[in-house]
Amino acid sequence: MDRIAEFRKWKVQCLSKADLSRKGSVDEDVVELVQFLNMRDQFFTTSSCAGRILLLDGGINGFEVQKQNCCWLLVTHKPCVKDDVIVALKKANGDATLKFEPFVLHVQCRQLQDAQILAVRSTHGLEVPLIHKGKLMVTEEYIDFLLNVANQKMEENKKRIERFYNCLQHALERETMTNLHPKIKEKNNSSYTYKKQRNQEKARSQCITKENVKELENDDDDVGINITIFPEDY
Image (cartoon, rainbow, N blue to C red; front, side):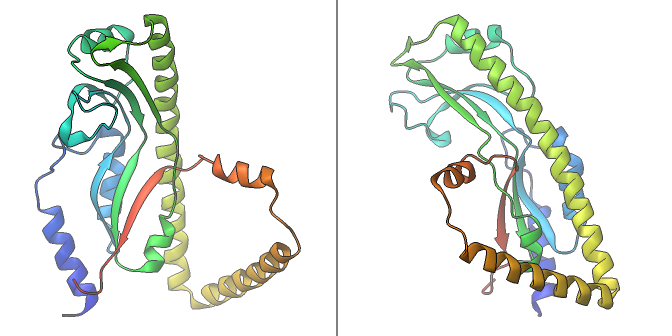
């Protein structure tokens, strides 16, 4: 069996399995994106989250919160209000942490060139401890402030999903057109080679300043995508 046939078989097997997430289904805000990827021959998704605000109780294990060892006091994929958090905090027994987790998408890719289209990252998150050993360590006013921040991140997260989806559609359309017209592909490759050479020459003539390094470390304009290339030994 060739690699393309093996990938198709693996895709069918994975997509036929039940959704193993706590919710048991794909989040509404990413359903269209997930379906779009799974309809492409070169991709299939293994898990996803549209972004969420959650409150975790780590029990007696301190701040080393792990999903399998903690209690989910509250989880929502929509903007959250303070009253819901206050009620949920009353159930905490150990160290409770408020988190915002941005959009995450895990994708299996048939080959490297397919994965390069999806190679983006994000640091658009939030994690703040609220309770330590059952004692509330912050004021309700501060909780209200944190929720405003988390809700703003949730709204920005939705915009990033839309932006990523639109960019992905355009990128795959260009790839399809390039494959259909070899002369365009040859022209694009020549242009890419020329630009790459110019960039390499420019890089050799410049030094990266501390400010540049800091800017790169703080760059969080992209959504978070985890990509796996189809393994050779599958």
